[in-house]
Every structure is written in C-alpha cells, then in structure tokens.
Image (cartoon, rainbow, N blue to C red):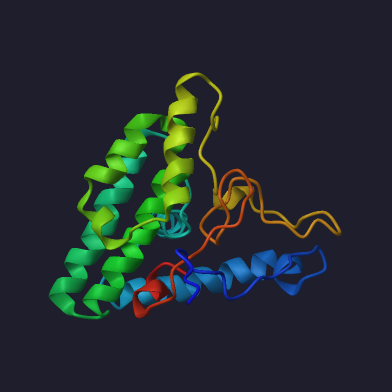
Length: 202
C-alpha cells in the first residue's frame, strides 16, 4: 500500500487578466465586504469600515505591519472565538480550526518581523487549532531567521492592497501571498478542507 504523508490539492486554477474576478475587482470587493459583514453581524458585532477592513486583512491571512498589529490580530481572532462560544452561531470546532489556520497564515506572512513572529505564533492558544505542514513550518522559520540578516521578507506579505490583475498570460498569484495556497517563495501550498467556520474569513 502506498501512503502519502501530506494531503494533495484537489483543485488548481489559473488567473488571467481577462478573468471576471480580475476584470471586476471593485464589484467583487464590494460583494465580499457585504458577505463578510453579514457573517460578522451574526455574532452580534457591528464593525466600522476600518474594523471590517482589518478583519478582511486578517481573514485573508495578510501579514501585519508591526508587532502591535500582530498582537491586535490575535486578540481579534480570540474575541471571535469567545463571542461564538457565548452565542453558538458557528460550530465551535470548525471555527477554532479556521481561526487557527488564519492565525498561522497571518504570522507566516509577518515573518519579516523576525523570530518574534514565529514565537508569537507558537505561544498563542490559536496555534492549537491548526497544525501546519512540515514544509510550511520550515519556510516560516527560515524567513523569520533570514529577516535578521536582511535576507528575508522586507515587509508584510499577502496584503489585500497588493492584489491587482496579473499581466496577460501570467497566471500566477501575487508574490508573497499564502492564504490561498501559495508559500511566500512561490511554491504551492495546501489549505485544509473548508469547514463551516471558514465563512467568517472568506
């Protein structure tokens, strides 16, 4: 019997400049904000435009621009879990796993902050919700250490503001984006199967 130690991606897609999602970025963005705002409202929370944008950045797995922002991201994710525990809107385990996955991606894309970001991830209770692949952990640790010598990422990766339609024929995700299954160095990654808790971060 042949056993594979790691899961395989089930779907691969190609991005190009003529794609509907690329040609109508503004429309897609407005719809995404509406959907996510509705999901957050189910928890009884009302967010300002700035707070909703921060939630979207976190849910997207975007890197943070400072230690304070990374601390804020962790507090926000934990507050969502605590609120859901009181209101029982989402399946508790599904949301815990989704938050753990998002927390790892946020920290991974914040590797430019150095080993502190790696330790910050490990020491958070959120880390128990998702176990990254070995290669993902290796990339994270390597980028964090390299940043000390100025050889790693020079800023947060995966920010929503960095998204733009690729050049014709490019067919690639933006460099540094990892939430949708790509490591900061451009190699393919694997996202866990979706669960009911993912809707809050889509």
